[in-house]
Image 1 (cartoon, rainbow, N blue to C red):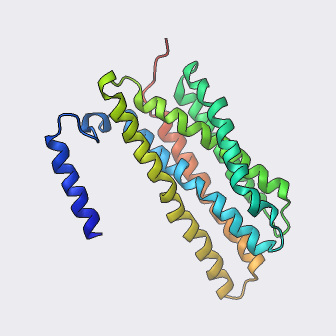
Image 2: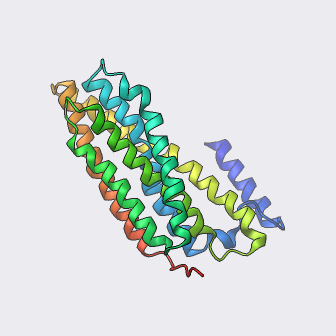
Length: 232
């Protein structure tokens, strides 16, 4: 923590003197950037933790089911790839914040499917949840970048892309750090008071799903406050 604070302080001091700073203040102070990053952390970061959480859920409820554990990463990242190439380009032809709203809604549907999980959840339902979630997340990441870079002078585009990429890369571990312990700690707590591990996992995944749906709803509200981007 001390090293991090000293490094951040040094970076800020160096950035103030730099002609072309790595983290351009004028770029980061824009409404499009601030709101996009807030929505990104609430959705993109938090929901990527679901891949780990669903694997943990399966390990508690179906310890001999190695299918979802083996293919969870592939299912989610395949969905993210499809979302990036299908939903991403729509933001070039439609108002991005409305495409984002649709993309975030898909993210919410992926989370809502977790409310249907039980002790004997089929591989199809588990894969469907991760696939739809990934599809929404893939579109989100691409479209947020278009929004963040809209109206930015050509000279700032490179630094702006790097700055956005930095926060996007921070979002995923942030989500894992918040939602994975929240999920596993609740399971451990329920088991400690005598709840069976399968029932504890089902209860914890339901609570997680509701929490994530609230985060998605707040993310959509933030997206609707984004400035409108006029497409030519």
